[in-house]
Amino acid sequence: MPRWPLPASIAFALAWSALVAHAPPAFYPAAALLCALWLPLSAAAAPPGLADRLRPTPADLALGAATGVLLFLATRAFLWLFCSPLSSALCAPTLDLFDRFHPGSIGRAALLGLLVAPAEELFWRGVAQAWLARRLGEERGLVVATLAAAGVALGSGEALLALATLPTFALWGALSAWRRSLVPALVSHATWTLLVATALGPR
Image (cartoon, rainbow, N blue to C red; front, side):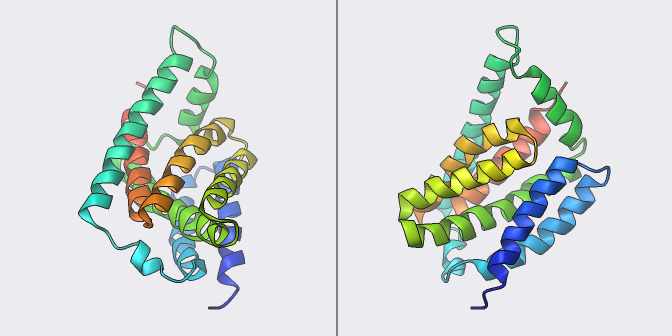
């Protein structure tokens, strides 16, 4: 396989972080274009066997949907603890994050769940974690990929996103390693993103 898709897909991961950091008025069209280009680059950069790891089974689809819903409920509980009358520690960054990125329409929410989430999964699980696991072993590869993703998220200037990245990407990485498939993590990520975008925004 050619070597250039790997550094190109890494460059697109950094470009995605920069897009989030700047959040321009045309964020959603730019995100759609960036992720549409990122997906095939990551597919080309992935280790051999990607098609097998993307082959869905009923068990993987159900596992992904269930974990996505449970992760959303855990997110609601976390924010209830830290952005509620009990504590306002995360209220300001949470409201700022929603002000900048809340989709405001079903179409934009679908873009997040059905294009952005798969692009992130294909890169972080299908490329980064997969290559790291080959060199470091499954557990270390998962840990390093998760920390790298959190570091890239922190580089966007969104500390709350970096905080959310650690547990969510650890879970999705564990799902991928356990099932030897990208499908559960991809479905879980998309489900969680759609629920957050449509049911967790400010009222």
